[in-house]
Image (tube, rainbow, N blue to C red; front, side):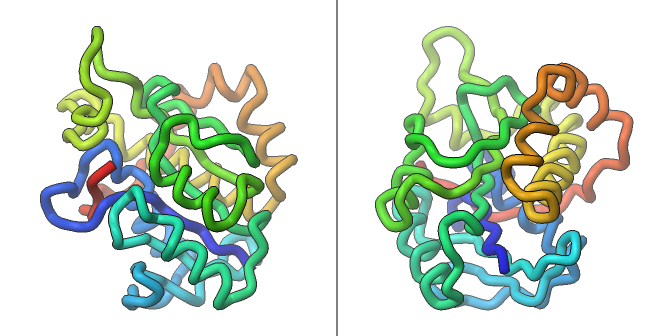
Length: 213
């Protein structure tokens, strides 16, 4: 079994912000996986009974704000006895250009408070799908930037970015982290991923819930 976690902040004021892109992908992916309805559990919204690539998947959206995401994730992983290697976390990434993906296993938080919180409960050895949101122009404030809405141009591309992140997540579950990383992080994939995402069917543009860093 896999526990697939999307990071974000609860509350309408954070919907569709950059920091909530993990929520956006989870909402789309749970529908594809035919998961059950969202239920409040462990301080999260949990959707059980999903299936990706023949693997049983439970989806989790921590609802206690970004910087304490680890509490809900740890409780959910403990309840279902999911090892860190099968806790896949989807999150925004300032250090990647908007729309670029990077798959990883282990490592530090890289300044991301949600990842820092999860590391404090699970340790660092869990897989991740890092979804690029880019950095603010110039010396702009990163904290304010991640809590702001995507630009108009970014909003046009966002369904394709979500679709690519869904594909990468399914590959991680179906193929395993190493094979998926070899596929998605290879130079050719990294260079062509943006073009490929924009030629495939975009994800449905749903509204998600997210917020505070």
